[in-house]
Image 1 (cartoon, one colour):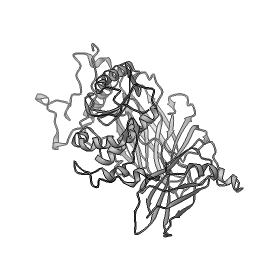
Image 2 (cartoon, rainbow, N blue to C red; image 1 turned 120 degrees about the vertical axis):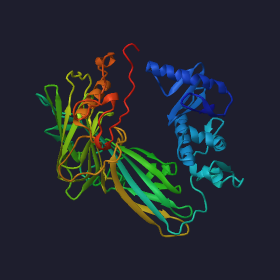
Image 3 (spheres, rainbow, N blue to C red; image 1 turned 180 degrees about the horizontal axis):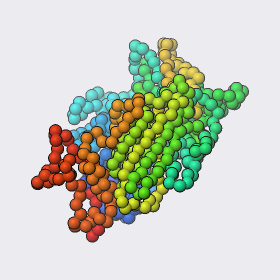
Image 4 (cartoon, rainbow, N blue to C red; image 1 turned 30 degrees about the vertical axis):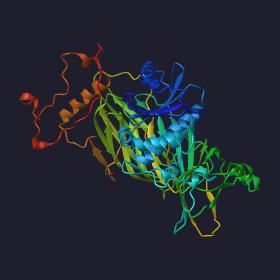
Length: 541
C-alpha cells in the first residue's frame, strides 16, 4: 500500500487541493502537518516523514508548495517519495512552472491528473507523454478530446504509442559523465596557508589507465564518476534497438579480454530495457519511448587524474589585510580546450575592499556568499594562469572555529569520457526495414553544478592581465571601504552593532564632509551600489 491521500499546500500550510484515495485518513488531519513541521524544524530534528498520532506525513517541498502524502499503515516510503517527485515532473510538463499560481489556475486539470496518476493508493499512469494523449489543455481550459482510452494505457509497451511516423529516422545518443573529486593539499608552515582544494568536475582525456593523482602539493583523496546515457529518438513504427558498449563483463564472456573495456557499477535502466536479456548475455535491448529519455545510468569509483590542478596560498599581514594567490594549471593535451571555467575561492567572512589581478579572465567578489569567482571562458591545455586577490580585514579579527571550505572548479571539456566508455554499435530493427542514422556525442561536465549558487554570466573575459575592484559600479574609495567594513560587522555579528550609539555606513563626499540632510555628494549622477543585507536579531532577542 502506498498512500491514502495526497495534499498540495502553500507555504503557510493551507491546502490548495487534495485527493483522497482510500478514505481511511480524514482530510482534516492535514491541519496538524504544519505545526509538527515547524516544531521539528525548531528542534533541529526535521525528517522527510513526520508523524502525528496514527497518521504519517510523507512530504517534499517544491518552489512555494508542499506536496504531502498521508497514510496510517507501514507503507513503502520509497515508492511514495518516487511518486511525489513524479507528480512534480508531470505538473511541470503541463504548466511549465509548478507553483501556487499554476495550481490555482488549473484546478480542473490538476484533479484530472491526480485521478489518473494514482488509484486506490497505488501509482498508475505516470508518464506525461501518455497522459497528454487524453488529458489535453488549451491555456487554462481542459479539452477531453476523444473519449476512448489510448492503447498505450493497456498495451504491454505503455511508454510508446502506435502509429508514429517520421520522414527522417534518426537516433541521437548522448554519453554524459559527471566527476566529483576532492583533493587534500600539503601542509604549509608560517603565515602562508594552503586552502583545501576541490575539483568539480575533473574530466579526463581519452581513455587511459586510472592512476592516483599525487603531487608535491597534495593528493586526490576521493573521486567518483557518475554517467548517464540519454537518447533522443525520432523513429517510425515500433522499432527494437540494441545498444552495444565496451562492457568488461561482456568482453570476458566473449573472450575479448579486458583491453579498452569498462566495468560498470550501480547500473540502472529505463523501464523499456529487457532486464532478463541483459542478465543473460549483457545485451541492452529495448523498444524506446518517442522523444527524449534517459536510457541508463551508472557509477564508477576510480582514481581520476585532475585536468586542472589548483594551488593556493593565503598570506595575512598584521590582521589588517589578506592576500590570496591562486594558480590554475591545465594538465591535459594542448589541442584540447576547457570551456566555461569557473574557480570559486572562499574568502574570510569579514573581508572588505576587494582588489583583483588576473593573467586571464576576470574575477568578481560575491560578499553574500563569501566567495571570489574567477571566470575563464577558454582554458587551453598545458597553460598556467594566476589570480591575486587583496582584501582588507577589520582591526578585531574573528577567530575561525571551522575549517575553510574547499575551492570549487567548474568546467567542461567536449569529446571526452572519463571512464573510457564507448558506444560500439546501435542496431535498429523495424519490420518495415527503413534505414536510420544513429549519432553519438560524448560530454564530461561538473558533478556538483551549483555549490556556490548561480553565479550568473561571467561577463567579458580578458585575455591579458586585468584588474578590477570587484564591483561594476564606481565608488569613492572611502565610501567603498566604509561600506565593506560595515558589511563585515553585520555578517560576523560583531557586538558593537548592538550599541545604541553605533553609526552604520555614513557616505562621505570627496572632501570628507557630508551634505546637510544626509545626502552624499554624487557628481555626474553615478549610481551607488545597493545590497540587500540579512536581517539580524538584537542581543536582547
